[in-house]
Image (cartoon, rainbow, N blue to C red; front, side, top):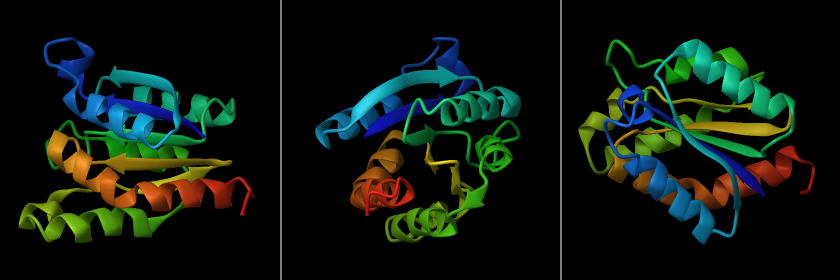
Length: 156
């Protein structure tokens, strides 16, 4: 299974910060035995994010796109909007599950706006941007994401 990891963070894109969340996700994806085909930080720009996601899906470059960051309440946070611009079918249970699971740890989980959906045969998932929150969410979701991609691909 091929996985793309996008960090939506302008400071990381401009190399003013380290890509800690992206690295955590990379390590978890690798540990799960999945192939990383793309790992990059992009600016928090709706058009840039949606264009990259769309091209990856339309050109069948990946099976799963994980986007970390940009799904909070800050003025520049636009990841859910970019994801919504790209997906053809929403999978609301994934975002709901992230928030429900995280709410057991912190009430601030309710402030995450991340969504998930499908474009063609690619699953796109918005993960939290904070490193520990991204780790916790992906740890919780990984088996179901792998199952979901197999279902989307018609393998199950």
